[in-house]
Structure formats: structure tokens, C-alpha cells
Length: 224
Image 1 (cartoon, rainbow, N blue to C red):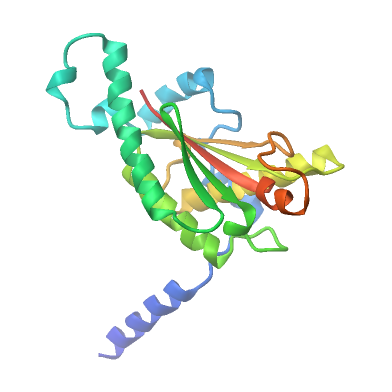
Image 2: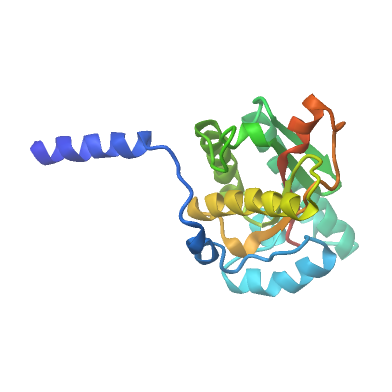
């Protein structure tokens, strides 16, 4: 009985323990197999054999075969399968992430999740917040279900005088999220990680717009 009680309270304590990023020196171990560049057609093609070799799968092998798509143009049928798969993923993310600072968008066959910094990190320190822990855990759970996808994790800052500092900060944000995902069961072989500094602002560089421009974006793409 005593052992059961100890185990019970241990589980409670573990569940209540705030998430803390591991020491930066260990990040490379968590992210072994990730690609540190933009996700595009060329980089996806180069990564696909590595991803499949590590146990990954394409959308076609992850879905139930549709007899109607067994004939006709292979490329068109493949696109139709990807659209259906990504539509399901988009719906799952949209339904689960109706929370402040998070948005889900569709971009062709890709799904884009925008997370403003305040929705995932502490206000004044570079660490995942308790709210961020909850948000990222929800996303990780869905990404584990829809695993026939590549994920670009891109960090952005607001306008900063020092471009190098902006890039370093945005890279830290992206890598910190990537490490979180790796620790929650997302294979690094799916990940593209990049820090883009103050590039591609999505809001004005005023007081409120800066809060929106400080963000991490997840672009999720089907593996064909």
C-alpha cells in the first residue's frame, strides 16, 4: 500500500512539474537528423529518403486506399489524397487550438500554424511557459497522429537594430520549440528549423504589431 501511494504521488508531482528546456549543449542530441534550412521542394526531396529510412511514411501509405483514385493521372490522384489528409489535419489543429495567440491557416496543400511568442514562451526569459507547454503538447499530439508530414519550424522577431541579434533570437525560439517536439515524440527527421529574424512581418512595427511579429510558425507539408 505504501509503495502504491508513493507511486501515485510521484505521478502527481511529475504532472505538476513545469517544463524546462534542457541545457543548450544537449540540443544537438535532441535535434539529430533535423535539417537547418528552409523547407522547399529541393530540401524536401533531399530529406525524403532519410525520413523514409528512419521509419517515416508517405501520405499514400498512411491513408486508407480510395478505389476511385486507383486509376487516372497519378499526380492528380496523389494531390487529391494529400488534400484530404491535410484537410483532416487542419481541422484537428483548428478545433484544438481555439486559443489566444494561435491561428491555423491553409496554404495550398500545406497547413500553417502561427504562434505568437506570448502564447508559447515566458514574457521576459527564453523559456517555454506553462501555457506554451499546454499549447505545444496539444500540437505535438496531433502531429504524432498525422505523421506523414514534414514540419518547418521558423522563428521570427519584431524589427531590431541588430540583424544578427534578431536572427540569433529567432533561431533560439525555433530550436527551443523543436527540442520540445523532439522530447514529446516528434521525429527530428521530419523537421526543418530556421530563424528568419525580422523578415516577413505580418503586422505593423508598432507597439501591438511587434507582439504579433514575435512568433514561431509551423508549416506542415505532406510527404508525397
